[in-house]
Image 1 (cartoon, rainbow, N blue to C red):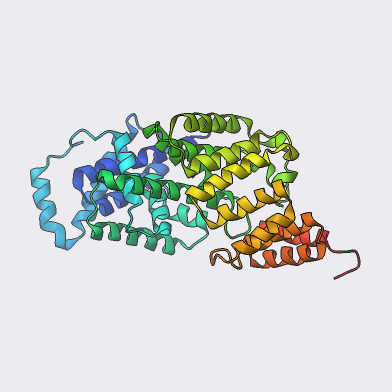
Image 2 (cartoon, rainbow, N blue to C red; image 1 turned 45 degrees about the horizontal axis):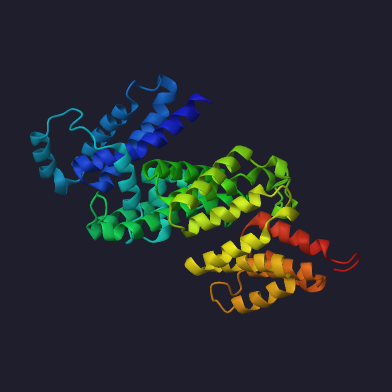
Length: 412
């Protein structure tokens, strides 16, 4: 591992701890987070060249505190308050920091505040908790840096306007806020695993960051079954990544993947996590999805997949956490157990849901089921329709290749 890579990992681990400490000390999340970002950038430049200091966390706290004071002084309306605070507070490291574990969890909950829309929660989480710069987040999501910066700035302003404090939410709100945290982490992972747009199927920086942050959360909440479930789900899903594309970047569906290329240690870890969670914690939607992923990963061959058990799990998931993608995946399981015609009938009913009507994945599933049923002409038409509607270049190429494969020789 290179020095730069080691520094990058260290900075991302320390970022939420330093933000949390400064916010606890000074109480201004917006200014403190900006100051920590500048300290992280300074460290990213200096440490690879000059060496990591003996107390890297203390270095970041000192630099961020100085930068925060500069930012504070630059605001003329707050000049008197700064002078008063400076007179009352002696220089130096200040009071002992609160436990880093508590700060990281509190920071995650704050970044997923209910006043924020999901896209803002994601951006703020990646910056404040993940330690990514605005430019890194923008590159990961293929959006302009200015757009990402505006999202982060508005998110911090909205949190301030809401009166939210840097503290654990009241117990009645805790479950709802934790649900938001898990949703944000999974949004980050999914965007990395199957990019919604652009030329690449993967954005590995996002999948790696989602797994890293979820591991941190798991360390802080070892008894939470859903946290274990979502970490297991990420590991079991990402384990297939080495076999999911060909050397030219073409998409390889699950049925055609070389399972010898799957990441066996990640599968073993994921299976162990979900096995323990299902045995010791109340069942939740992420645990059910992880259990489904485990059944896929443990099958030696695609034809050995336990589809009846997968269907049972999807039916349970559809009961406790219904959603359009759950519906589509359940229909695929129905077709694998009861035949493609049965799946096609359920798919026709499911299209009444506005969230599914016209979605490219509906056309892709219909094409697959029609192909399985032997209706190649109709399957070809729906593969082409799905290809026109997806924004992902690898998905489009795969769907077009399926349509071409079903095209009789000599026909247009």
